[in-house]
Length: 434
Ligand SMILES: Nc1nc2c(ncn2[C@@H]2O[C@H](COP(=O)(O)OP(=O)(O)OP(=O)(O)O)[C@@H](O)[C@H]2O)c(=O)[nH]1
Image (tube, rainbow, N blue to C red; front, side, top):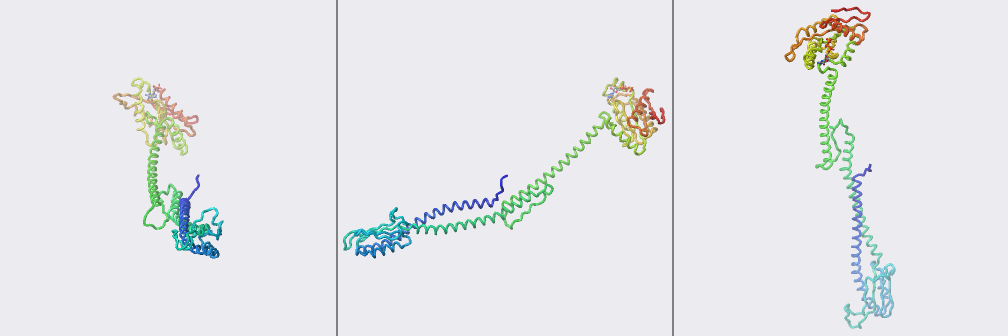
């Protein structure tokens, strides 16, 4: 991860760099300007001094007064702009000099000012005024380099100092403004975004900022954030309702799948799987509360003939109709019926003793036998054989079903279309045949 760097720090460092570059260019230009201006002023000054000295030197050389020449040369050299002064007498060859020749670099450079010293009375354009024409000597002046350097140092130091102070001031102002207007609000926004939990999306973003009459980029970010929160809230609400809707649909589908997994598709009765589960529960409940529980096996008689005579589709319709009629005779929410297999059904009768179960079986037999089934214009007569068994104490589900099945087979073997009671278990009483 890249390191954190504050925008204010970045801005200030950019300002400082820019200020340094500007200052370098500015100081360079200033130095050059000062140097040129200094040289021009030097030339003007010196030319005036040199002109005024020219006359004195002319008289002194003409009168051969070296003392005066030396004094004038020394005076010229004492001027702060002057580094070195030299006067050569053309008549005697004598050299008068003053100042620091090395500091002025006089051996290396040409003098800044070089004037001939004319014979006294001679004008500048060489017109003689009562005296012979001629040159008495030369006056050479070199400027003082250290003086220039000092001048430039003073001037540039002031500029640089002012510039540095100005830059520091600008940076300080930028830093304060950036901190108050940018860094602090951005940190508050960042802290808010980090601390915001999905369940508190409605919490508003409140920024601690100075009073203002206008709005800026930070306000735009804050209002964008608020809009994002609203959009997220509505999106989450949509998702919640969608999830609730899908969950309800899923629940319905699960229940439907569960129902289908426990139901016989053809007749709508419970299937074998449901029978095993539910009957085990009924037996358990019966034993726990000491209540009676009876089961009735019902097997349609000669059903094969119906299939053979009318076809399997009609056979299916017969199975559906018989199941419907039987269910109509059962106590709702108490008794229930399962398709045991093929044309065989099992009726489970909680809180029902042998006698009542036997009566129900008789009623069902009458219901099936009494009315011919009207299916697609066909009148089909159907009968069934029944085996009735009541749960005995300590009896298992398998044993109970076995006894009811045996009773049903007994009914078949006894001529069909009848009800037989199951024999009691070994040790139990014989219920006999109805
Ligand atoms: N249409 C139809 N027929 C079925 C279905 N399940 C089983 N069967 C038929 O039921 C008939 C049962 O025949 P059997 O076991 O000989 O019994 P039955 O003809 O009823 O004779 P008994 O039970 O002895 O009176 C067979 O022909 C099976 O094909 C079904 O779901 N639909």
